Image (cartoon, rainbow, N blue to C red; front, side, top):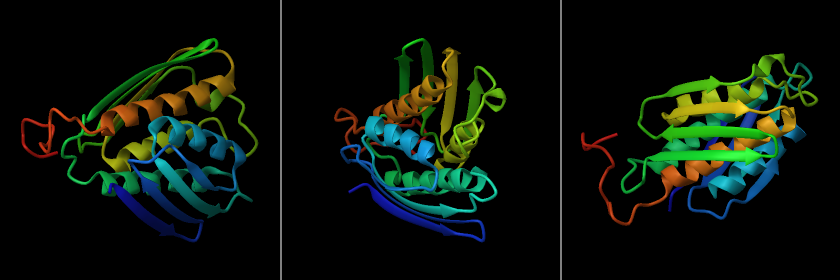
Length: 197
């Protein structure tokens, strides 16, 4: 079973995440940030990763530490659950339309962290309560670093800020599902000419 549980306790946050890569896309638990829960629900549903999260943080300051640390812990949990990556597709791509918005996401579970975002400036968008709009890229950057993967997000166009963020989380989920699926033709091989990732 490709499952993992990671906990992180600091003076700013307390995060406990359990995942099952081979799940049914069920999100449970909660963070203190409703919009973030909404986005994580989409990620879980479209990646088919069961995600249980219990998070608390210093939201009296803002949502930054809670969202950043959730990206760290989720990345570590995914890395642990995936293991040596035997038999996975490794690469995943998704192009997701959401009304007037179109988002493209590509991932490579390469063992080398890299995050790139191209599109409208998220930091210039209004937020969603204590979820500052720029925290989407902050979360994804920490996820890519701690899961050790390449993650490229391109918002090709869009106007509605809710649609832009939701399309990003859905497309990330879809690309993770594709990359982490077992390739029956590959069997138990590691998907690299190096023999290791």
